[in-house]
Length: 312
Image (cartoon, rainbow, N blue to C red; front, side):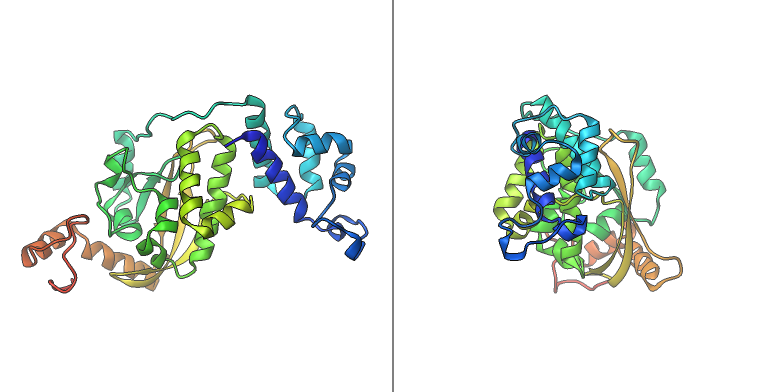
């Protein structure tokens, strides 16, 4: 991904979505040839010359100061996340970095111990690009029970959350409001891409999803950004049915891309009871009993084949 192109595309899409009446300018109706604000109107609001703003949007000027970026952000009515994204894109454009393959992400033993300490609370560690670096038993059971629980241990074949959301039918079926979940994933991935335009693996992931999912391509082209820190989702789990879960991200200080995602249910709620049932159904001793009763198992997940065994 080119930082200059990404910066220009972001400015253009935000400008196109801002109506003249939003900023106190007259709307000339059919006489307005472009959606949203004209470049010269945006430049006037930001206090910069029209030619300078045009060069910035076209990727011909990469030396915008933080003060100018803040002024443009205010003129565009950017929120805090969008303003931060604008600065990230401008910084990437200045660096003109060459795409490179970053080293494999990893977690140390203390993180594995922390995940286990969450007990029956579903938890996983997500990397920069949404790769699952580790999860506890309940994290696997809630978010991806149909895939190999040892998947995060293989750096070359780790489960990837954006890929699962858009390309995996089992994960898609987990969410009652899949479009809202998908939108949150894309907007968070956009923020990451703004900070790491030189990440060849991230570029490859975005390219793959764009080619394989028209829905992803449409959402990505919108250039919306938002941190995916906390959201409530209704989920339809194949073992325990419907439950409402708050997916809460625990993020370290800025600069560290890894974060822990927890699946929390309201205390005393039917959803918490469903999580307890899920914990019981996937407990190691229960799994061993099921395998003894049904020796025929799915080679990928290790789960008994449908129709051959008793459900717990």
